[in-house]
Image (cartoon, rainbow, N blue to C red; front, side, top):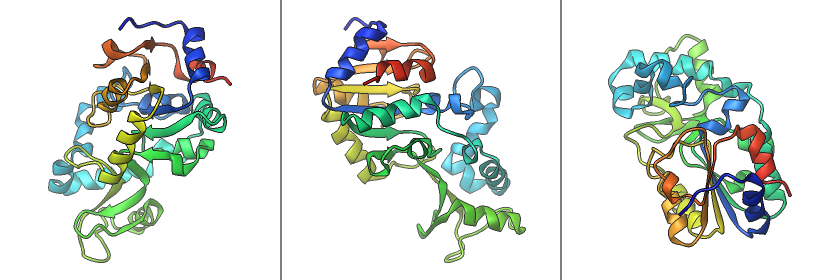
Length: 252
């Protein structure tokens, strides 16, 4: 399939589409001041050791890593970040009645803050704003967990069973929630256009949703600064700044 970058022509696809499913990654939130992971200024690019905090095995094994992780949660820019025009463009697409589902790999909650219907947002990799016990699965809020850290518990255990607490996010070594993945697969299989925005498409199974969509006849549009493993499958590749180009692509 020959890729193209004619924004006006691709925008016509979205205007003609009855069902668009979007998959967003860290790149859509960089315009809100939240760094991505693999980009030139990415968290892992600048500090490769930071990847250890995203490994379940390392997190469970190393108490000091958990202490560092709680500090990072407290200082995460998602607490004060505001949605940017890329997030708002997807809200407009939803209000125009064309958004089938919004699948996100992000944990920052910016889609909901922008005005996306929470029932239409599937947080494939969980959320920063929740905490769960790795032993008994008890859940609480991140605010409650951070309050315990501030009160002098640098690595607070579960108050029910004493187990290890972790942000309600999906780490490497953890499976996606089965219900979320099933819903995402259905949304990818039932769309006219599958829009992948700001994602390197290197993490499975989320990246594989592109193949699901294309196999069911959808056009794949990738909006990302760098190459992805699915570029050859795309009907269009857009390399422009997401905050600038997404409103143009999705204008009513």
